[in-house]
Image (cartoon, rainbow, N blue to C red):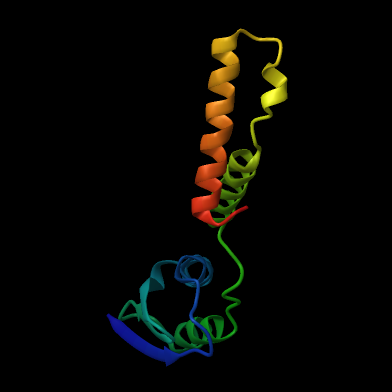
Length: 122
């Protein structure tokens, strides 16, 4: 196995960079590892100089702000969850309910405010 070390300007998105290089090199690409801005590309012994140049240039031109489809999906789920959690209970929606339900609604609304306050979201 050949290990090619390169230093990048920014910390890479290792998952995305792995997908990008694997798509270009196929079986010649074994994987990558990173520590901060230092990246090691792992290629098969049979990888050519052209393969090494392609892997290195892909790493050096990599946009670390981009995400894989899986990362985008996870980010969207997180955003959706945060939006859902930020919707506050409206106590007035329960004004026609029994006293017990109204009391529960008040307590849930109070609890939501307390949690938001602890999170610093008020």
